[in-house]
Length: 379
Ligand SMILES: NC(=O)c1ccc[n+]([C@@H]2O[C@H](COP(=O)([O-])OP(=O)(O)OC[C@H]3O[C@@H](n4cnc5c(N)ncnc54)[C@H](OP(=O)(O)O)[C@@H]3O)[C@@H](O)[C@H]2O)c1
Ligand code: SF4
Ligand code: SF4
Figure 1 (tube, rainbow, N blue to C red):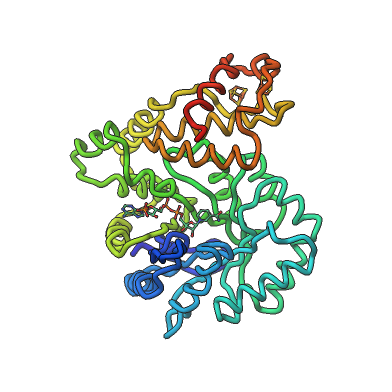
Figure 2: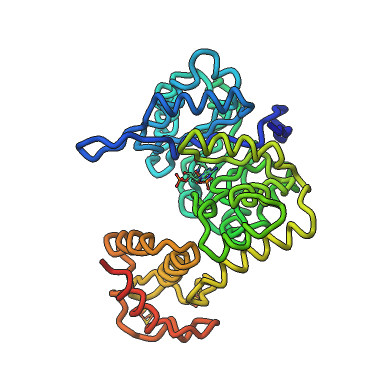
């Protein structure tokens, strides 16, 4: 297993990290899907025995069960062999004391006295503003001083501007971002990644396979991969792309089966920074182009059409539509759009005022497109 120095922490960490969000589950008659604890613990320990030394969980993963199973898996001497990370569920924080209370609860669930990393979970601009008002710095400093956490960081889901604002606000020990070869211009973006590197803040990457989608490419992308003389799998190409960036310290993978873990352990023997050739970079660019050619709506997510006076979340609707075609996952459109209908913001709210079309720099026929998406996606 390749390892890297982890910023100013002085620690050295494996390049592959174990994401405890997609563990194997059991299917119960009542419809619940608890973690298959025996298999999950076997996988976690196998990973650690083969060099994984970074473990990432969070309060909400597997409906709260992930932290408990992580704690169980790290018994019998495994705790001392890894850097353990969990995250503050910031959406449950309404007053200053909530942060202390939640951290204590999480230490209890994990059954440990100390975390290596504690991250503010899934920050976006709005959530971060709330935590600033609640004095998150004081909380993190206190938790470091009293020994409950060693290092502090944040995980992130918003745009580049928000990422830069957050990363400049505190002396972070690490940042966690979504990054893969389809998302190099989304969320924190490659610029944000490089900015973190310039500040010597190690970056941990989540969703390197875009939640698994890059492991199962559509037929045209798969044909390209199969024809490449390098004889690598789709997973291999996706990990190597992320691992080529020297700013990336550890890459998290949520692994559901022992076979996936074994493949990833094997691939990560070769995931080295600055190791891809020009030809390999060009090849990954071709894969990306092939995915993007499947995109149906030319929306650039510039947000100029927002806010719609009726609350229609136009860029979000177009992104879920494009994603479902790009990744060849028709079911995902109905699922995601269904939750939009439930929570507000779907296309049926449109009253055809035309304000969005006047603002759209791409001159998209937004009203007609919204109607077509709704017809296809509404259950
Ligand atoms: N902080 C946050 O806001 C946040 C958000 C997301 C994730 N995370 C963390 O980051 C970790 C990594 O993200 P992720 O789980 O989305 O990573 P990912 O690697 O993009 O996706 C994981 C999925 O990829 C598939 N996979 C993995 N290895 C494979 C292999 N060798 N062959 C075929 N398929 C493979 C599996 O999908 P199937 O099960 O479909 O086979 C697995 O569930 C998470 O586990 C979690 O710890 C944090
Ligand atoms: S045309 Fe529809 S989607 Fe566009 S701004 Fe007006 S109400 Fe919103
Ligand atoms: S203004 Fe046009 S391109 Fe920009 S987000 Fe809206 S629909 Fe997309």
